[in-house]
Image 1 (cartoon, helix red, strand yellow):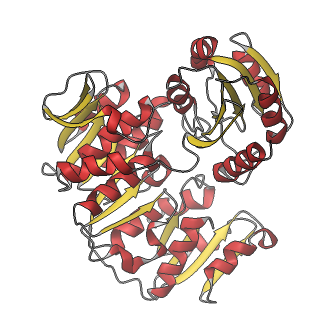
Image 2 (cartoon, one colour):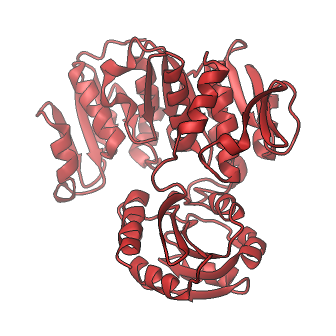
Length: 445
């Protein structure tokens, strides 16, 4: 769907990874590109270096009206707030799209689109591997780490683009149409941006708004908010369930995963462990089969895939204590799934930057499974108030102190788990930085 951007005035808002990629792609296509970011120039060194050539104008330290007023097109980075100049430009008829939509416009390939609160990166990676095992030409990109527009040539002449997609990216799509899509789950997250769960779920549901009757939508039958989306879909709905029998979809029955009633793989054969990863495996299988993978390719990848860094990653075992890095557990729902999977006593390190979450759903689970809760970051006070009565709770000033404290309290057979239920930006660059610092601290014990 390649468009002609030559001579078009395009404003790119936000100079994070996807904004830089979009600006570079548009400049290469002949557009007159201006990038804008609220940070001042002296805080944008790496981003400006990544922009490369001098064909992009930069407006830093705010968002001047003129670069919106004169634009033919505005491209938004994920999560950019709805600033006043942007709203005014839209009122005057300026087209505003997300970097996801731009990637779609630059591509001639079919898309698998994957969204949900938790599990997106794991499912996206699995689908990419399954389709490659089945002999397909695949690009894996999006919210998983490589912006869709990072290499526009890579978006062309592929069998499938497998894209991890956040709710932020979906807010400003127009024509984006994944032929195969999934909503994995919708649990509390980003409630500092959305006015409640219905609005958040509505943003996720945009992934299938342009699908047609021959397209496929994979939904989680165990999640009421997601299951209800089936009634809004024009596409073919395929359900997955860990708890129910789904004759026309994929489900767990006893010790096996069944695809349309036939055994696909034994649960014990799946290399990645935990109840959430059973759901991830089912979603990935349904998506991959819908995109043309055979059952053998799907099962082979599930037997081999070791999991992703920062997602229930085994760091080490020391004196009978197991240390697990789940830094990607940035919301309440993710922590529930992580802690549920352990049968051994858990010492949990949690906390960070609160995203408007209600921590009370963790209370009963922590009372049952968590022997010690070690809190860090800005959310420590709110979490202690909500969860302090569930189990022994202490507050640490740093992650390194939390690791040392957890280690001194742990005995053989315990699990020390970092699963924060919060964003990382109060103390770290991102969840990856937090996870790496946790691993460094553990290895120094």
